[in-house]
Amino acid sequence: MDLSLAIFVQIIAAVLLIIALMVGNAVVMVYMERKVAGFIQRRPGPYEVGPWGTLQAVCDSMKLLAKQLYRPGNVDLILYYLAPITAFFPVLLLFLAIPFGPWLTPLPVNDGIVLILAFAGLGVLSNLLAGWASNNKYSLLGAARAVSQTVAYEIPMILALLAVVLQSGSMDLKRITDQQGQWPWEWNIVLQPLAFFIYLVSLVGETNRAPFDLPEAESELTAGFHTEYSGMGFALFFLSEYANMLLVSFVAAVFFLGGYKGPFADGFWWLFLKAYAVMFFMVWIRWTFPRVRFDQLLNINWKWLLPLGLINLWLTAIIVKIAL
Amino acid sequence: MLQAIWDNIKGLYSLLVGMSITGRYLLSPVETIHYPRQVVADEIMASFRGPIQLTKGKKDPAQTRCISCQMCVKACPGHCLSVTKGDTKAPAQWLYDFSYCCLCGACVETCPTGALEFSHKVYLVTLTREELILDLLADLQKRAAILPESQPVPTANLAPPTVPDVESIGEPK
Image 1 (cartoon, each protein chain N blue to C red):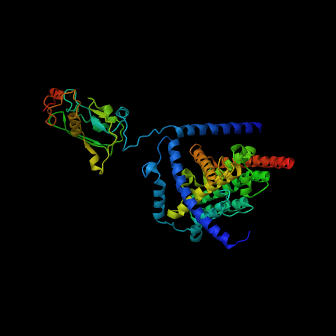
Image 2: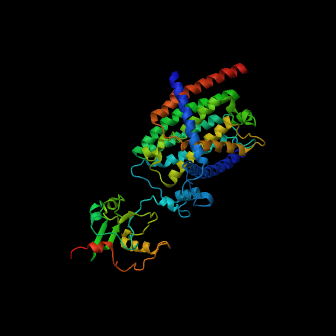
Image 3: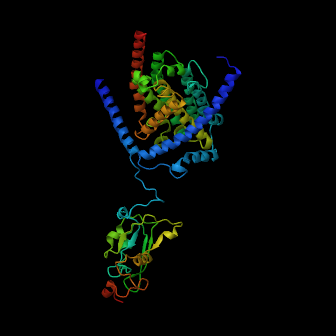
């Protein structure tokens, strides 16, 4: 891949669009989260601001923009301000490799999934920096939990994705999409149901969402690693958290649900529909299940997801070897 | 080992059961009331135990049954009642500081004449603390004035009661 001017311009344009997508996604997700939470608890959710409360999330983000940046004493200054930025910027890169449509990949790379997994690991670093630099026991505990949880859940996630990679013989997200058909029974979820299940569980753990939201468990750690952040510092963490959710949903859609392919007409609308279906599932389980204990969390990972992922990968390898 | 696997499969099934419950709730209609635009029906309010009020008199609704015996004042754990006896047994002033009231109902229980009851007022809002000191005699007379049409509207709302039950018993002067 040569870095000509055209590709440079393409990447700049893509990054701008991705920033717009991240902010828009956060607004949509806050509204969806609150509405779904409301309906599950038999109450209406936000309904005062705008029609059906649709402007509530916009008002909330305006409030966050206008808030004072309050910094507690004795923080590690550089790391304290570096952490939200480290949380935000890697996510921009991650979306570059996603094939949004047949001719709509921001940056066509051969090993898209390697890029995604490598830079997704940086998210943990930002949590760790934030927890360490805040000089707060809750933040530090949250950071410690975030690191051990995210590092643990990355492994079954990678194993589940590797099974699909072995099966399709490529790490290129575009090629993986192209190998799947338009109709649901032609998608990888039919061939790799166990991998999809493992991926689904570990994406909840990877994005630190309930029932695996131990790094920011409100009832135990006030807000975990971002306790001491206010205003836009908090907003950047918030944005990157929702962007990470969107990213893992995109990867789930590409790897298991046929990506941009769908009945009647291929296009980015199918990818977004599938990704938001996965996001809706994440919201749904958040408002259904209570938070697990930390030992339970790691037991699920090391005792069940990891062996299952290994068995699945091994079986896939054998079947691929025999079939080809 | 097999037992553990079986337990986990059963656990997964229980997760599905939980998700089906929340999924059903997600699709069923909302149960809450949009307060400023809708209000709860009066039948439901009948079971609400709000701030206390004086019971309407048996003969004259504007006439309290209170005999100023101070039982409620002694029973109140928050010291929020103050009953001033008038010339007769009927109270001259009946003040109730709702900001101290814990709605325990001890006054209602102890009242020998049944002069106190819980009201069904849900929407009591004030801007200052002083406004929460309620004059229950004035409140009783206000409520007696808006009686349903079937009952005779009392003529002597504001005048002191003429022939109350308690006066015949009398207190030695």
